[in-house]
Length: 425
Image (cartoon, rainbow, N blue to C red):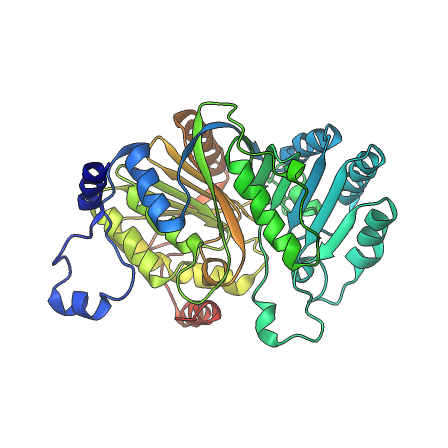
């Protein structure tokens, strides 16, 4: 084993002298690329493990779900739950979709299933002062026996707590079936992503060992929020049900580099032929911008799909567009999705590696928020994600230096502001 580890370590060491001694000397105390990762799932798994503590385990069955189709599948699984249903979301607001979840959970509680719901109050009500979740959703859930908690309520707390949120989206059924992606329980996630009021998003359903990590992620946030310890039956242990290799990388905001940023950097480093990124809030830190430029110079086909004119946070869109000029000059191709808010958080590498989850490529998500993404090594899943890209291209506009790609003072100011939010090191 020692010889194998040494061989892999030789492959992943940064190449010396790439940028000159002075620059290397100044930056030697920070994580940087380029990383030279051995090809294929085995070498990638080893590097992901030493960076995040998560490796690619065999035994998964996965299903790619676009837009509102995730809810039909999710509710079907909830209705068949025998032991527990756990939901952790950033946004849950009153609507017809919410009513469907409340009814499904009510029915399961009456059948003896333990149902627990954890919501982030910033996403669901407190910042705007809208108490609709408290008055219209939490009350109904509590009345039918669902245990509900808030993650880090803001009342009486310091301002810094405003940024330390959980942005994770998790639904776990019986500790054996897990969902993650960009979803919230609100009307904008219904539909097909082709109209302004229907956001475009991508999600994944998974069975297998990664669900244990998803359940532990829920449990840790649940305990912090006043919930009791889970029963052993809620953590049944790994269950191997399919051929797919994968791992769930969870992350919490902290001083220094988070596992979310480590995961993103390692995934980018793995690309040899193709790196396609779809992200709702694409304004990564400079180190990741430089990593993308380096990959483009190596000849990797790098494409970015970002939101277009329909965006829920205008300053983030301006910041996003401030990154275009450098990337375009380096050879990166960029598209903006036109019909609605493009809310997906996916990465496609070569023909075998995929990432689907809640992790945005902005300073807030990479440094302050709780996040989670499923990393999968599977050619069939990669082909399905590629087909999602092909469909989205039909509704997207390519950006060039001559058409929307140049930066300007407003975009530069917006980027400074959005990067400042995540600064802690």
